[in-house]
Amino acid sequence: MILLYLLLGIITSIIGALPLGASNIVVINTTIKQNLRLAMKIAITAGIAEVILSYYALNYNMLVKDFFMSNQWLQVLIAIVLLGIGGLLFFKKSNSKKVSKTSNSFLKSKYATGFFLGLLNPPVLVYWLLVYGIINSNVAMLSVKSSAIVLILFFLGVYIGKVFTLYIYGKFSVFMERKFKNVNLLINKVTGSLLFTVGVLQFVKLYFI
Image (cartoon, rainbow, N blue to C red; front, top):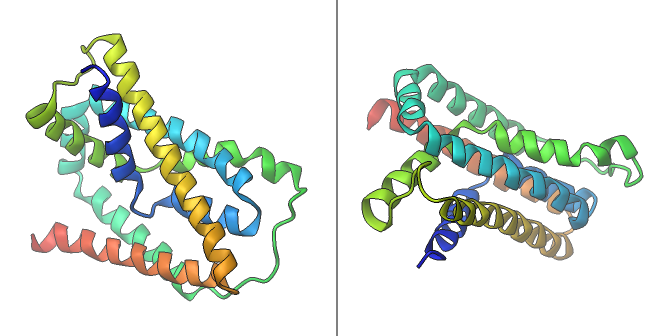
């Protein structure tokens, strides 16, 4: 029964990591321009950041929820950023120059890149707030007062789910690179369209729902 928390952590983390976010995009681009091994360095620390955010949401559940609800400007800012990034990616021209695989300074920053991209992601906090509400209402009780083994298993599941999903994104990028000649441009178009759509939906949710 206690393994239920590990499974919950994995499933909820995978669901949260499936939509294209900053970490996913960087993993895709790194895999295409360099290789999957380097992309996994980003995934490893992005998983750590996911655990931190999910724990923060659990620890400060109501405080975080009230902050987002009372600061509509933050939600608007997130929507604008998504629209901007989506537009830039969609209209970005293909770049034939590849990043050097021997650039030490760039390689060393992979772990930091994954961590900060994973951590600086406010929508993830909102997602985990919703997750905890659903879990506590329908599945099991989970709080910072839960036993240590329960919390360890759940957050281990969160980490596994995040890293596994990013790994799948990386493997998919390898497949796409082999199938399409100009895969980088295609990925930019698809990613840009998705991010732009998410930004539009954010505005619709704020002002029309």
